[in-house]
Length: 101
Image (cartoon, rainbow, N blue to C red):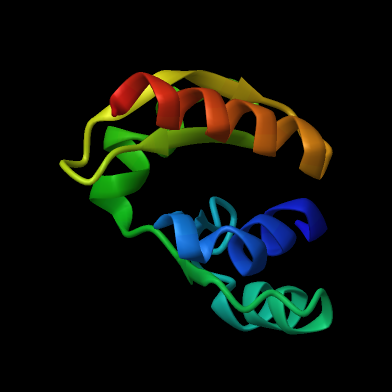
């Protein structure tokens, strides 16, 4: 999460936002919120409801997984599997920005 927090903080001027999905937060929202607070995460995180779990979360085979979405809500590029260092996220985001302009 530190890499995503840094991306959120440093790339806002480029219109980049970060949204977290706390896949294991259903039924444990207090625990999830404690972890977010402990790790100093300030970007928005959601705890999925049952429908979102069925439609998206349960269809992902790995955690963590990241994806880029454009302003129309369309997925841009490939899923990013596993944790990545900040520099790798920046490289992926910069390439995606070049491809959508």
